Image (cartoon, rainbow, N blue to C red):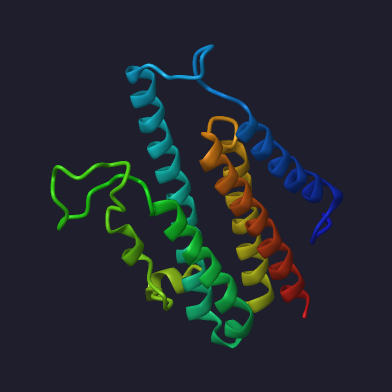
Length: 193
């Protein structure tokens, strides 16, 4: 049986994610004079939006898992509600500047300044469907372990994205990866009690 909880490997991965974020923030991605060509800048902006969208999707999936566990195990509300709220803020931070226009925004909006109206699509309260809740283990401790594993997967995905992320996004992803790792620890401890 494998060891649960925070291991040296997980602690080193979190430290590595933070270091990678800091190193990425210190490097320049431009030409020798530090200026990107218009084509390179456009490609970099598209890549950053795609990376941010993918990371937001990972966090949205995690948010749905929290909703399903809360629907199946309402007695765990005290533990899960603050963690779910943090994941909802992660989604908001990642969708803040995706550049995707909302249906009510004008078509000539600048994608670098438009919030896309995405911050209001993150529900403050859990909204799990019965189908999502039925996929959750009936054992509360097992459900928390599964949720901790989902947090670790999300943390790993954010950490893997650091390599290609722009400095600002890399710092955000490193912070989110560390938060997800901390959530996994808290959920693992919560499963024991």
